Length: 359
Image (tube, rainbow, N blue to C red; front, side, top):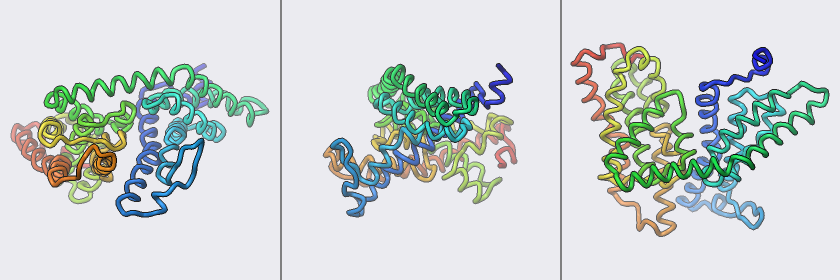
């Protein structure tokens, strides 16, 4: 059995499923739901007719260009997961149907359902791939059959569980914005820097509202914090690669000396409750944006698209100067000020020395 699994490149491990597959799922979401949301917002803000008009009608549902991109989130996630799991072509192409089924049956918690179902379908498909003379029939049948069966069997329950947990977090944040602001900000921020996908976690839980705002704060604290405190060692290249790229680049240094992580974590514990209690920063855009921070400024774009939608729906009268001040302070200014101050104290204690943050 071990030899067979090795031959089929089926690796049952936390890294393969919890890091590779989860990270790929987030990329699939970026290329569908997130991009679709941005296209719709761009069209509305700049009054571009082509981006605002209906380009397709399916079962009485009208779709804009952005709407079509967003509608493909299930297939996009599943194919991305299949790619991360090294699926052969027939399995990979069959994942389109699997992703659609899991996302549709998973409801609002579809991303989590897609993660589990896509992994099962991909591994079963890989197991039978090229094992028969009629591979072109057997492999798609098994992949799609397994995927649709598990979509029917577990996707609704997984979707409901994910949304229930996400709603619990959001309810608790509304009830206790200070404490939950700290907890969500620190936890999601840590997840962002670890080799797992904070964006996929936020998407799977449907994390929006005040909790989403706290998540944005935590992610920004990590990215901007590491970028600024390591500027002496990494200069402008490091500032850009960490500040609008990913703080995950520091994982090697964190493993060598975990104390280099103190300043960004403390910063997230400060900016999180400021976001929830003072600025009332809410992420009402796509949940995946909550776990992106300043990466490509996706977190900030997500907050802005949420504002635009709230104004359009009548939930918000207008986008105010205080809104912009809160977003800019939480995302960029405060992390750039607080993290170096805390880091200076850590250096003074002798816990971190020069070169510890060198990429």
